[in-house]
Length: 278
Image 1 (tube, rainbow, N blue to C red):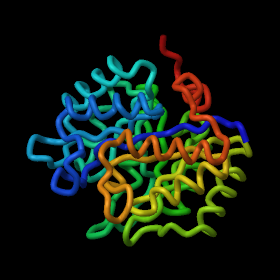
Image 2 (image 1 turned 90 degrees about the vertical axis):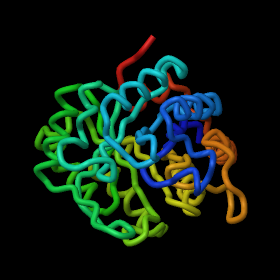
Image 3 (image 1 turned 180 degrees about the vertical axis):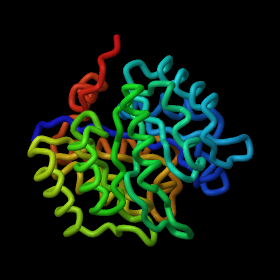
């Protein structure tokens, strides 16, 4: 199998702090530096959250703008994907950065349980976020925490609420949501191919110790992979990951194992149907 594999690096997230791992980048400058190292290690998508100075999550468009600009300057061609996740803000504030016109943005199309709360994605907010992505030419990445989310993405595509063929990422291993279950994973892949076509690109993300498990499942099955300190702060039970780049290099080693080349940013943009940049 020689199909290029896109590596997405989720650099920060909304939950991990420096108390969990000192390598977690918090400030915009730390995030830019960490992303550049991951880019040089092979990552071609940067999945981005921003934080306040006290490490709490925020949806501040100014911070997103500074981060986006820094990544574009120091990581030429890298795909910038901004998060509209619910831990960083409420209501339409979650989409306040979309006018910045990033290449991509995450889109959760349904609700589910998280470790200590409900991750609320009501239909009216989902429709508004999707409409903003259409208006600003931002490609959504569908974050599927449940099988129903894949079907909801298909319905939204059929109704014109998602412009292009959906790019779905399976998220497995979140406590109280979908566990890392191989039979379910295989059915997810089957469902994406049935709904969107045999050649539809898809990705998978595993949380915590499941990160390397989902990397292996996705890469060996022709999908794309997500890694990074947002999802997992360790290399193993006893070893903290020294950087996002270290997790990217580990993912690239799995690509080597299955004889899949790591996608260049040009290949990643072509696979995902994104605009070319010089």
